[in-house]
Length: 344
Image (cartoon, rainbow, N blue to C red; front, top):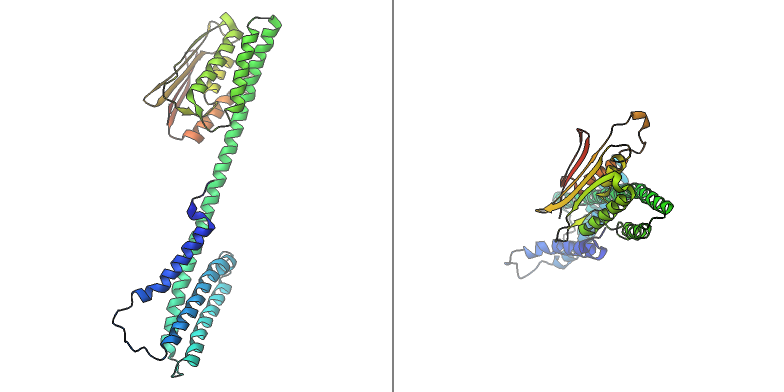
């Protein structure tokens, strides 16, 4: 998954540095302009202390975020976490106490202001550090979950495609065998069509989407091969109107409906008829497949019956979500499929 520039390490580092510099300069930027022209003797010492103390707070921020929270909070070792925080607070207070004892003129420490200053600054850093790390870990977890879902989706789609293609190829190869046995003149053009189909299946179906016109050509070639196979035994009516606009569609999405019609709409069926229509109106694909069928006893049905339609329904759910309508019904000796698909 491609990440934005703001997720690069250099960008993250730059944003951290900018935030700390802004925080350090903020009190100075907001300081009143009417400053005493004669600074106190301890002015330089306090400036030095503020830098040292600020660096200590930065260290506390990342120590809490990168060490204490993963090691103690996430592992529910709360007593150890509290002891560690108290140790840092004591160290920060000791730093201020030692500074005042050594560098200030009075050599006298005012305990209450020093304690309050240490407590509130440390509490602010602790709060922001904890929020920063927990939000950061939550976003990382959501990103990893999203990547895992996308990876599983691609794996599942690849599996569903692989379940469609072999079954289709077996049917076409059976057609070729029948023509070869008859020594039919239709064998050569049929092989050319088969070569075209295989080229499409090998080189086009790896793409997430293909041009709708190519998918329609694929369907037409398949129908032509089946027409050669069944001849006058099956009446085939097909109207595949390719739109002028270059719409995109998931490859091998429509063929299972046509394949299912030839699988269950031929054979022992009297006056077998298969009707296939495709058109696009107002960015909506209307695809219908109808075939006569004959109910067979449950025990002699093909074990793979319906697998193709189950797969294509699953693919529609994964890829198009609420952007399609699929109506499959059996009525009055007819098996009908109506697919309405919103094209982008």
